[in-house]
Amino acid sequence: MRTPLVIANWKMFGTLAEARPLATGVRDGLKRFKGVDVVLCPPYTALMAVGEILQGTPIGLGAQNCHYEASGAHTGEIAPPMLVELGCRSVLIGHSERRREMGETDELVNRKVHGALAHGLTPVLCVGETAEERRQGLTFTTVEGQLRAGLAGLDAAAVGRLVVAYEPVWAIGTGVNATPQQAAEVHGYVRGLVSELASKEVAQGLRVLYGGSVKADSADALLAESEIDGALVGGASLNAQGFVSIVKKAARGAATRGE
Picture 1: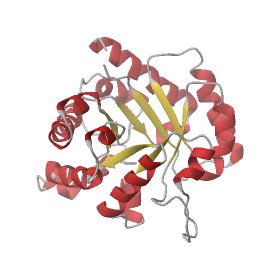
Picture 2 (picture 1 turned 90 degrees about the vertical axis):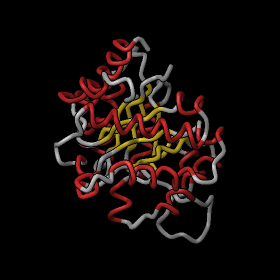
Picture 3 (picture 1 turned 90 degrees about the horizontal axis):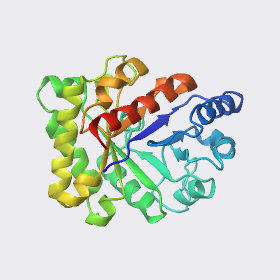
Picture 4 (picture 1 turned 120 degrees about the horizontal axis):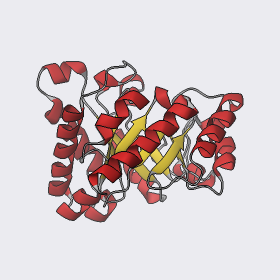
């Protein structure tokens, strides 16, 4: 029984003046709401403010990235213990925008996964193919390579502490999301690979999220798929009402499937 998970990735949006009312809107919109785990990932500068707003609620606080070491001479970086101190319980790792814009390699992503786990953070490992890779029929090859590299060196228990987010690069910020069938096919492939790399039990308990232009009007069909355990929401999470709607649709999807 996998509880749906919906994560808001605010990316590089949200001054304090914008982050506070957005977090408040999500908090108030989900009062007394159960059945879905929710995490907000604001920019670093808004983590403390958003954490204060979410305090005493079941809504979790997450970060968009972290370094792999606990401290050191790494100007401009944020260490896992710093995030934990602010109340973070999860962290996005290997988002395609960081892979593309910051040159993050599979090896670096793996080191970050290990670093996050060492300090009690839940890594949300992001994998996904580009439009060209999909055109060439390399979707599964790409996803497998990223997943194998990201999980390298982890035992089954550690793999069980992760969340995986499948985010086809060609769908991020484009307004074009994968069809429910396309997404479910990759999610099933991810689960099968984790079964091989860890165990069948770990794979069955692993939450695999879909990310890539998830909006309230497309969420119903995506979240009704049995292999899709929730969503990593980008632009649509910057509107409290729209994000709350996606969360509620995740709950309905799970209820429909009998979870």
